[in-house]
Length: 286
Image (tube, rainbow, N blue to C red; front, side, top):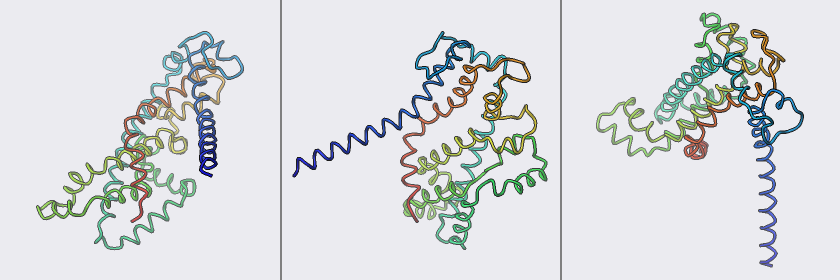
């Protein structure tokens, strides 16, 4: 009987490993193919089929991206929008989360309910009012509009609230007895003890902003303010770069895609150790 259970468990583990390996392959193979094609020559990249090794190794795709198609400007815009937007988002989410974590806050449950309701409304439903608001503020065609877009979200506020609530009250009470105010307790006690939450919120927001296409299409008409995703969208959907007349071959498109995901690949290992803890603690209920 015990042997049957052991055999069943081994079969279960084997099937799980095969299933996970299959899922991993569906993600790794396209990424590897993109890397390989981006490092192929113009002619080699036009060959049909999945390539697992560069045909006629060349970095002409990356040179074309930077020197001919001038992808540097959209890249710089994406960095500005993502870095400043993420910083503002984390700060606002921390401030709101700390306020919401205070047990004596009047109407705390009502505020929490309003935040939960706001999370059920998709951006597409408020797109027109949002556009009109940005227009009335005179921020159309500016990077400020993209930075302020999604300046804070209900998900981030509730995540930070849960983190602050997990901090032992004895620590905060001792600080209050010593005369520490709310801002001191937030910046000097709560924030340092919530690195996992800050990293989780920051990573989610940075990835969302870096990949955001809709807000830029909606708010920006000046091509010099385009972000990287808009530039890549134009690059992939066009057979040639209209401004330069340069033929956009497959290796050029793949080079643009690799450049777009490199910052995320570099950032993730530094926050990965906080990420799992952040999701686990942030999901605990009040």
